Every structure is written in C-alpha cells, then in structure tokens.
Length: 330
Figure 1: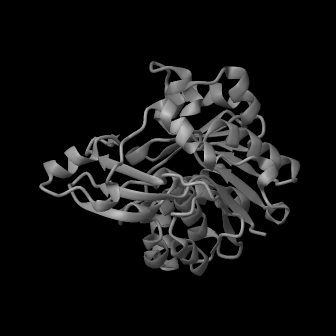
Figure 2: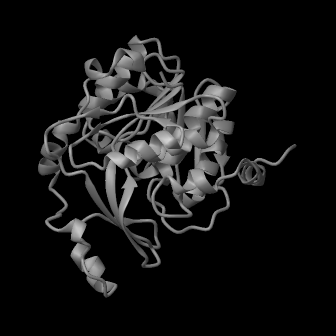
Figure 3: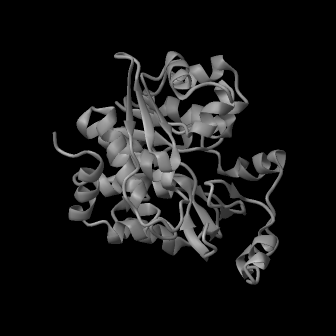
C-alpha cells in the first residue's frame, strides 16, 4: 500500500520543444509526471501509480518506476491492444500542437520517427473510443491499494474520475486532489460540483478553469466560483506565472511564483506540480506551502525530456535551494 497514489495515464511520448529539439520514445503520461512530483518530496512516504497499460507498453519502464521508489502494484494490465502514444510540439507562447506530427518534423528537417508511423491525432469521438479500454472503475482497484494518505486524480476521462474519487473516499482516504480533464467544459455545474464536493483541493490550469467559467471571468472570480461548488481549496495553475491559491474558508488568495529553472521541455509540468502539491498538503496542511513544493517539482521536470530524469538530478540541497528562492525565510 502506497502513502500517496497518483491516478492517470501512462504514455509513450514524442516531443518537440519550443526551441526545436526533438525526443522520441520517452516515458511519459500524467500519472508518471504526477508520481515523480510526489516522489521528489515524499522523503518518508511511498508513492504509487494507479493506471492501466496495454500489452505493448514497455514493461521495463514500469521496472524503472519501481527502482526509483514509485510503486507499480496498483497498475492494471489489460490484454486489449491500445495506442498509448502521444505527440506534443511546444511553442514559445506556451501553446502546443498535438496533431500532424509529420509537418512539425519536416519543418525541422527531421524524418518522422519510426514509432509515430500511423499516428494521427484522433477526433474527440475517436479519442473517447480509443481511451475506453484504459478507463478504470473504482471496483477494479485492488483492495490493498487503499487506503492511502492522499490520492491525486490527474486529467483522465469523466467516468474514471467520478468512480475512482468515489472509491478513494469510501476507502477512507483522508485527502483527495483533482486536476481536471477537458470534461470540465462539457459537464453541468451540478455534475462538476458533485465531483468537487469529494475533493480537498482542485487544481485546474487557467485554460481549463475558463472552459467552465467563461473567457472573460477574472482569476479570482473563477477560483471563488469553483470553490463554491465544493472544493475548499482551488489552485489555478498559471504556467510561467506560477499559481494562484485560493482558500475558501478565509477567502484568501496567495500568489506563488514559478521556481527558477533552465527550461527545456514543459511537458508534464502541471502534473508534477499536482503530485508534489498533494504531498505538501498532506505533510504541512498549508495549501500555499504545498503550491511552493509543486512549483519546485515542476522546475526540475521541465529541465529535461520525460519525467524520471528529475529524480536523478534533484538533490535535496538543490530542491531546498529552489524552495528558498520562492519562499525565503521571514
């Protein structure tokens, strides 16, 4: 049984950074990045991943997680073939493109990687169908995965989100955090509120919050509206600007800056932030401090391709130095 469980996806990533560097066949997925963020701060507690993976997903990658102190005992293997590839091309303005990878490689004078043969960004309906085998019902989770000290749900389909958050709460998991998927722009206020009522903290990106609240709503208005639906803490992730933490009970806003970093690839930054936040909230009980831990974790992840490199480069001294840079002693 892990102390901190991160639910989400396991992916094989193909990436182009904003400065035109490419990386292929990289271990990714939001569950991976969230677990790495949690592991960076879980000095005493064990981190685990809850996800499904198909027969073509590299078994040696799961072994790498275990060797880095991230338990894979709650990963559910499936026999059905499923495409777990992802392509991202990042731009300097923070946006990214997930479609037509051949054109992006051609613009760099590079051939399409062999691993992307036959890849195409699916339509919304096709994407829903392709992800269906990876859905997780709370009843599928092994009993020995519960209870954890904290459970974080990364962006994943709506059915998995509802079912697994409900299962975690029924298993007496004391802390639940949620980073939404695109479903936030497709569900009613009542549906979103029912999920947020299960959570201790809700951590959308600003763009995701706007899908629900509207493009003209201020950040403060969005945070208050989302908190009113159920979650006592709302953290808006703002990319290079850092994050904005809102605590409903005190009506308090706290701006948290991004931690210093040498940026290479921003894939997974928000997921790592959330995983570290979950550990920080569990350990300290303070959402602002937890967001600082999240900022530090994200800063290590964005300095290379993939997630696991951060666990090899983030020494405790460097981790604490980056924390002091954004949270100096009073």
